[in-house]
Length: 148
Image (cartoon, rainbow, N blue to C red):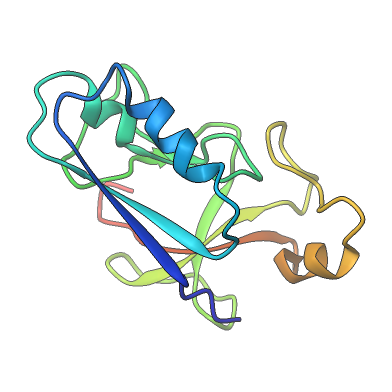
């Protein structure tokens, strides 16, 4: 499945902690279906970086992020939230090695964790495209470093 975005929105932000969430929500409320939002932090010295450090989707709560109290690593989206069993897999569903890019998937063999949707309403075909082989497939790629 090709998930190349048809539209990219690029947002630069400097010390945007007071308005960043509203700006991101505004972009996410748009009607395009296959887009991406790229937010560039321009050396903010407020909490903008902490707000940006996380991965989630409209189908989930934050799956991966830098949680409060954990050390923040520049350029990292963080570690899996405790309620999610996250793996990175290749196109054949095999785990990838440290440093290799893979699809972010959530192990749902024992059921969906609280915070993860269980299907698209009235659209079994679309649901089956992302829920298979015991995983929820996000369609997004990431690389894991030696720190996890």
